[in-house]
Length: 159
Image 1: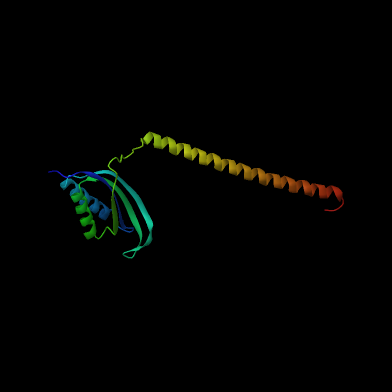
Image 2: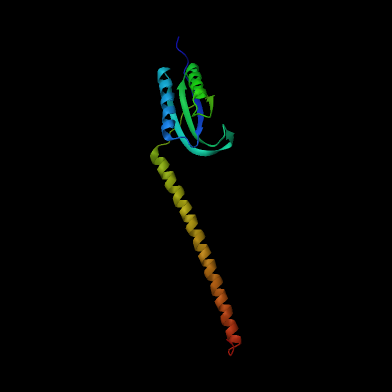
């Protein structure tokens, strides 16, 4: 009887100073386990190196990796067992996703359009702020010059 394949989300943390070769080694171990036990990676995100909330095995920073997997419970147990004995994984957490979970993939064109729109809005706002600052500075300078001109007109012989 074949086992039920479920979807899981797995996040694991490498030490922040771990060389990329060691990260790839863990990926190879993970891929080999999944391949051997008929599991598959649906999605992988490398969140990069971030400060840990508290030291873990004396590490203050860690590289976070998020995975979404489709595999059996036995396959997940084997992945977790391998993570426990792998020194380059300092912490991990896995959760079962809802049976109706669907990984939404946003087309790259839409992501690019959104990024362009956000950048354009931010630049436009920054330009408006700069213009307002310049206008304010010029107004202050004009006001100061007109006050000094008024003072000179009242006392024409003084300099």
